Length: 166
Image (cartoon, rainbow, N blue to C red; front, side, top):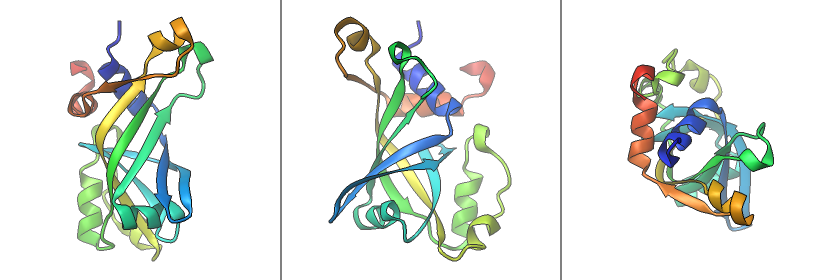
């Protein structure tokens, strides 16, 4: 049987989009964004004028959910995350450092030009502080929507491990 930590790592490894939750003076807001994996979290690209980018700049926190929307309801699974969040400076060296830190799944070109070529585009680092997976037993046995907390460090250790060590 797959452990909750293994499930969380598998979901984060196989999916590409996170729904980011933030709040500002106008209330809560969610937005979907493509993510790349970092050693302790992930990063997304966004315009500095977006509502979630402004909320991150103001509060330094965000939440997120990554889930597989292709499964049947009885097999639903996902990871809910609490993040410390920050905007990366619009300097080539700062952007290059984030790009170079990507985990193997997302390794690639470390040229910051794709960010710098759009003056209002930034990277946002979302460092995972807490993570939860769906409690499938509660759902299947009682129809109760519940969560199980997982060890964030263990999840990211699995994500960083070579495929033959998972």
